[in-house]
Image 1 (tube, helix red, strand yellow):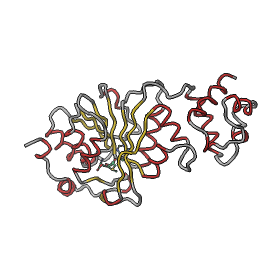
Image 2 (cartoon, protein in one colour):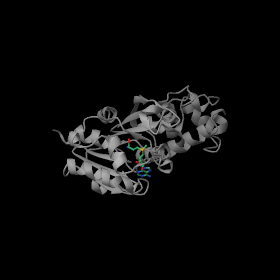
Image 3 (spheres, protein in one colour):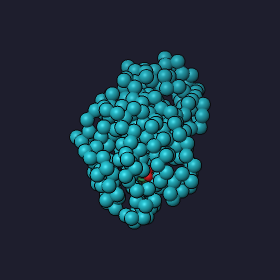
Length: 280
Ligand code: SAM
């Protein structure tokens, strides 16, 4: 019998440990172990990797990650009620699973991890987006992680992988695609979760690129993109006026018509513009 078979079904875990879902913690659990195994498989080859999991809850995805051969899983869970359930998993996989009880937005788990590191999580959406932005904007590139496999509200997932010319295209797409390869790997209806959320979800997988797709200074690119999309309906010569008094010349030098709107500008062109602005 494998370690995973010795563990009770997740519905039983929830009943035994009285893990009634709390809205305040964004708790929508995945109870189908076939599904959590499928998500874990999307995280890439886990053998020889440490995996950081945020918000394991009753541990469905955790089980999948361990069964897929993760060398070590470190989980950060805010809800103390989940700890006894997670201890059962730790007992079934001696030395391979560790839990930190705390808020993922406040804890720095890096000291507990050994590269190569992959990150996997089914998190409340607001926490997920905030962590994604932090993971995509480290002080140095390449980052400490090799890949991110994260559940999002479908609409947010679409913003991460969006291409120019679409409504979903904006800061998140540029941030994610500048230094990572991002794709939607799985779509899930509300009924996949207990309790079901109001909207559909999707799993996004991001592989860190060894270096940015196009050269640019991260702070300048971020400033330009923020200004451009804050007033996305305006022409760039107007929305970017505050960036530089020479903005029309910079736009032209970057090959972007000053009358263009942010939504139409490719990542490559935004990087070219950031280089022109930085040169001045
Ligand atoms: N991963 C589990 C699953 O797939 O069934 C649970 C998913 S549930 C959507 C989100 C989990 O994140 C809950 O267990 C919740 O307690 C936890 N959580 C919420 N906010 C958190 C935070 N700031 N830091 C760490 N965990 C958090």
